Image 1 (tube, rainbow, N blue to C red):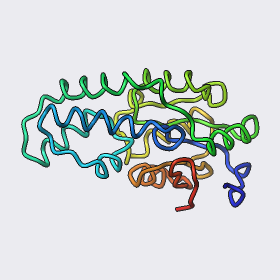
Image 2 (image 1 turned 30 degrees about the horizontal axis):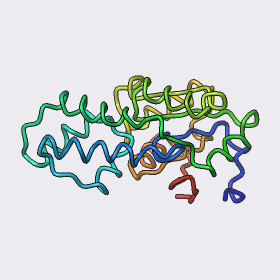
Image 3 (image 1 turned 135 degrees about the vertical axis):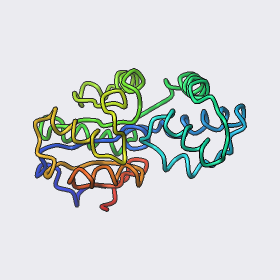
Image 4 (image 1 turned 30 degrees about the vertical axis):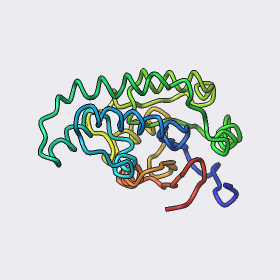
Length: 198
């Protein structure tokens, strides 16, 4: 899968979590679909998937404005999160990514930069065992400017003591790739654990 990538040449590897390291995106999208139906918000699975990395509240506000709808953003976010949490324990690591993480453990510093809340991310990392391999986590709670701004990934690099120009970011969405590039980092598109250079 990743023989063309020489991971050891980087100061650090920085991973997005949902849809990149773990298979949680379908659960997020199912929760979005159910909540959108309840609140009368048009739902487009492909569009929502591309917004991966942006916190729920920001997406709801954007979509409500796009569709000219008055939606209680807080109530929507609470409901969507509650539906997602009912299934959070089903989340697992993509096998190819597990292999990569284990192979690089102890050789290259690794961190996670996610649009999820710290609570949800910590729960998934503990549940899957990723927390034993990837010590640094920057969540939506830790930055003001979320993806496509580079702040999330720049903070991971800072915590790892890495030069951003020599970090490799793994992402599954155009918005995430944009955030990595905005931080001056090399980027790799990781679709369900499979890597393609971008």
